[in-house]
Image 1 (tube, one colour):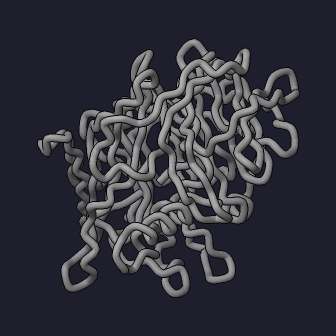
Image 2 (cartoon, rainbow, N blue to C red):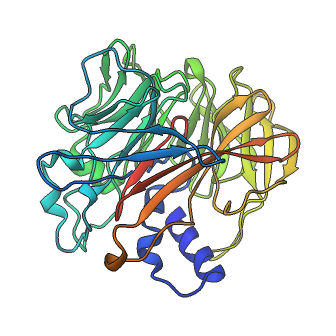
Image 3 (cartoon, rainbow, N blue to C red):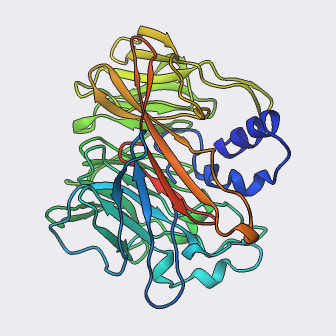
Length: 385
């Protein structure tokens, strides 16, 4: 079950007849957990210009990226606000033109900082140009941003290893394991990064936890995969193929007797986990989506609170969950659905995400900002998701 299918089924059930395949394309990478990322932007000639506009709920512009011309500097980069790619602003068809994006600067991940700087990341694998009808993932290379925005994790196609980069001092740590690009593409690899950016959980058919500063690798038992990693590398929350949650410790997994596709980062003290609840499925069809948030003490397995959503903003339908914004609030995000899908006659579509907070004690949801961009397809990554 993927988020892509979730969106298709729910939109199909609740919206008029439209071409839903393109509309939901961005959800394909958002597989079974909030940590599984997204992208965007534009091209015309040698000078590439892309604008990603971030607006507050009132509509005022909060951040606009300028011309994207330079690769990420060696050091001195401000914390990341988000990262994106957009297939060069061109229409993308895995059956015909995927290979044409190979080696294109405009197809690279772009990192936008909290101070408004925009930089290409040529070292990070972005779009999968190998895609053909028989090998089709509708996804891009994995990337994650620590919740404080200070570190970025990605797949280094030159080193054939996963990497974590400190944006301020420029240090780069590589995983001890070599993972071929072919394996990365076939497995649809995703990355889980601890809030402090030190511990990385590469996840494909198998899963590990890597201390990027020491190189120590801890294997996760078969059948379980990393979902969240606490600061300092502990605790480690894992999930099985049926979204059942467990706590990994001392080489063993203790089931937590809770199930969810959307699990928050661990609280700063490492004890509290929030997850979204209420989803119901019939086969691969979502018949009822998340409508409540639950907090759990992972050290004891005890449920601490449960609150149904309240004050739900218009357009809020398919939430993902991120990190803690305060002791009582957790970040949510959602794909914007009031987007332009006029097709070629009306120009390029506007895509985007919106961010929210939810109070874990009351369930009150409050909108924070919108991220919009012009592109036919793309992917966007926010810190902590």
